[in-house]
Image 1 (cartoon, protein in one colour):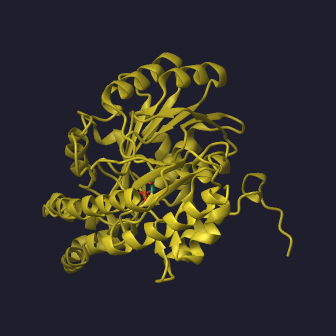
Image 2: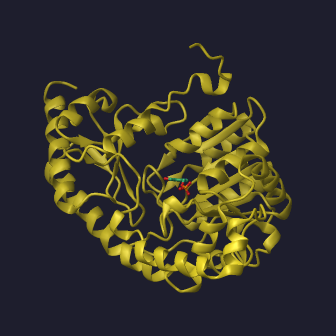
Image 3: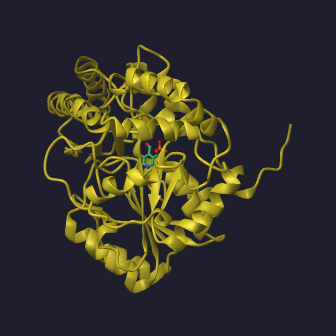
Length: 399
Ligand SMILES: Cc1ncc(COP(=O)(O)O)c(C=O)c1O
């Protein structure tokens, strides 16, 4: 059958994401490819208990099974204020908050609200693959901004803002996907000021800041926003459960109203059952203990991966060593093509994501992303050992 798909989607194959999920289903593969929270951290018992309580309450059950308000389930948004205050965002009113179906929907709604065909979106290179695909689906034009060890390069950002006059800048200042990097406070402040000076919008995507297992938290970029230019998006996917599809956006009342209009056309509202579950999860004080339980697991797995890298990867491999989040980013100072080598790695039962999918211009063929959150230390050791042999072999053969 030959279909005439839209120009935006016709060229998209979704190959990278599809391959990840195919690989995860083969148990012999040690997968560093996904971005899943650890299965041992999913709160099965608590969600079971809460769901039973909710459905036993006739009035609440009827409310949940009926259509709900686009902005969010009653009483849920009131609980988000304290979470925002913890990242330095004070005094957000209910009209400045929107519940969304995963942070990914927040990103989609921002593109829907702000992008016309051909508008430029700046991203820190490399960045979250899902956002790059969303921009392409809205016919946006992507331009990458250089980064150093501490995140976005402010000089390159300002130069690109002047050159491209972007509508949006997308940033993950805490434990970025894919690099694990965290921006220092002064860069966050400087970017918020540049947004006000040049009049572009900033999406601050924060799924990971609470997964900090070392170092000191840094306040959000949104907390420096005096001009309504930054929209902060956070998600319960990595702190409660990704299957619940529950997240929220905080921005100026005017922007949040537009996002809500966009959401009405997408899914009308986020599942009321999911919102009610997360609401009670917060009320019953399961949230912080749940995170506390996950942090030693992530710390142990990250340490296991760093130690295995030191033991097994070639000397030409440079890598990040994050204080939180789910990812380590690696780069070869040698002619190593991670796209080509992937097949060989799979034959040795180890998977990673090649770095090209995270760059605005699909460059970075000497880079890769390693996820450590969902494999045991023993399997991490075995998987990195296998990758080390593959890459050392390739380098010895001249790439
Ligand atoms: C940086 C980033 N943003 C957004 C998302 C989407 O998360 P969700 O839609 O589950 O909240 C992810 C998921 O991995 C991510 O890594």
